[in-house]
Length: 80
Image (cartoon, rainbow, N blue to C red; front, side):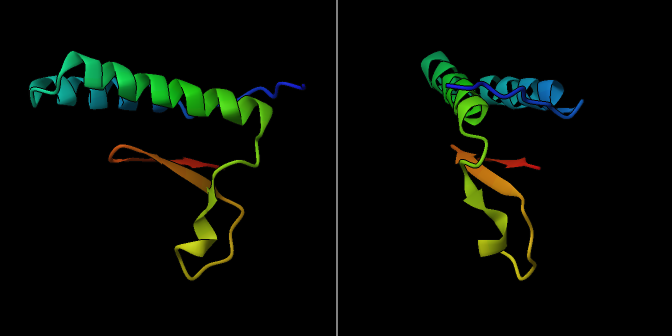
């Protein structure tokens, strides 16, 4: 199966670290944080093999767009 290369925004790594740091400050269990990070990794791996996966943003807003998104816990990741 073909693997596509993902391009991330320059803010993605720091945003992810901010989320994880905040979860630690709020007292989340380390296992919960690890599960969150694993879910992000899993979704990104899925995108490498199935780049059209995810839900359509246009189903949530009144604008036609090709953007896709997925939700992990309380975070929404948008793909362009």
